[in-house]
Image 1: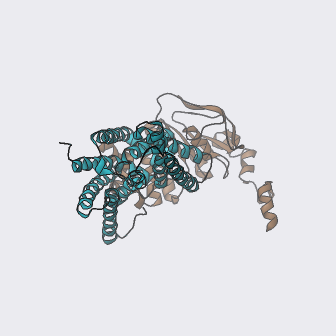
Image 2 (image 1 turned 60 degrees about the horizontal axis):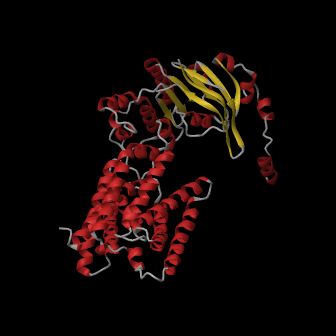
Image 3 (image 1 turned 90 degrees about the vertical axis):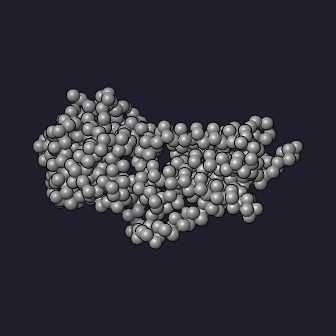
Length: 268
Length: 241
């Protein structure tokens, strides 16, 4: 049944969209969009290292993304301005990654596949990794949901309730690294942040509670993935970017509907 | 029963001492107020007690299995997060529907349950924060200028509610306030803080203590006028003026 490459691609897209939705909501609520970007950009360095040392791409990307997340978190506590820090780390890790990949003369690698994803080339193994990673992220976030929400609303209220905001931040960093590692095959490092943020942002106007926002974001992400796959098949366009385009259009529609029906805008 | 004790508590941020030699304690059923000028470390003290600030020196001991209710001075709910009043009261522990309804009614917010937090007025929001702190029936309630943004009658209502809460839950209540007269009327004990404890005791003792009167410049205008900061950073600024 999984022999059809379109079916595998669709399942891969759905897996990433479902895992990215609740995590993306937290990234939007905590204003961490650039943090997501930086973690994703670091992934290309992970790809280069994996190919150099013959370890699975998933593992290499996971480790480097995680290191990036921890570095950003530690340095921001030392008093660096967050946006400057992310600007430095995000783009320099991308640059170092690209340079490192160029050293790999022995292997012929398709850089484009890692930058923009290659969802149509998803194999059965990849599918296992994507769904395994997605399930892990959903379990992590589901398990910590209340504590994550509380520390996102206010760190001090969380402390008073016996929740450690630092520990919850580590859970989010770990989830982000896993999502980046599984999504690299689907949308590539440059567009992962889009799959995290855009569905969540598009879901905001229609949500009354955090839970509803996460569910609507998942629906938008899944719809966008399937529609993007179909459009790219019909119009022969690159699949990863097409998926992001569709999700972006859904965001546009959401913003328009919001503008028509509500007087007070929500600052996303 | 003793709910909380601190032992020579000290906090400094980057070499700057904010709190020093703080030894306080509070018992069940007691209302303890902390007064002090701006920058005297009142909020830092409360944040240290709940564990949001790690003390540089000393320790905070809280009796085991005590539920802490905390009402912060300010709380900004990011507008990107949808959150109804109802959902907020169930954070982090899910509460029973009837408890939530009762809490809302108690706070005079019965018809606001489905409203988004971001649409509430300052006074309504403050009452929601208190309702949330009370819903778990705390053993220790910490209030950081909880009447900020309330008008005179709102503030009076608030203190009446605190008094009722003390009677119903028999909890220990520690509050920070700028309203000296109200504080002196409602508290069992007052601590006057200016980085370290200046004086403490029953309200009628503290209100005549020279340290307290000096700190707030209560005795005459002369004393108020003579009080000046000898802070190199600010005096340098002044020399430019």
